[in-house]
Image 1 (cartoon, rainbow, N blue to C red):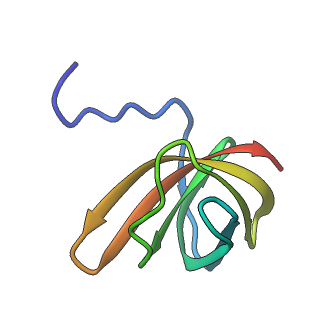
Image 2: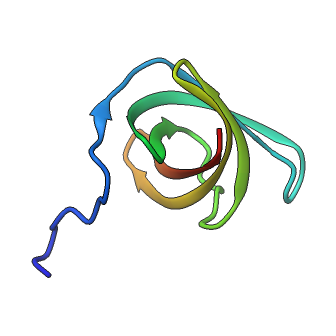
Length: 90
């Protein structure tokens, strides 16, 4: 595989608006952020909470969907955090 090659299985499209994710593990928390893109099976958001972890389950809501999702990856960047989610129940 070529370094930097996109591994996405589904077509993504740009999106915008607010996203809220809620979880109870390790303690009840709500994280608000900005929707960056969506696909049929997931979404990406930018936010300020660096402690989401891969595999963590969350409840989510944004302008295009709501339901349950699993954290797939986190990317810590200057100016925030990006997280990719896989929707498990919409």
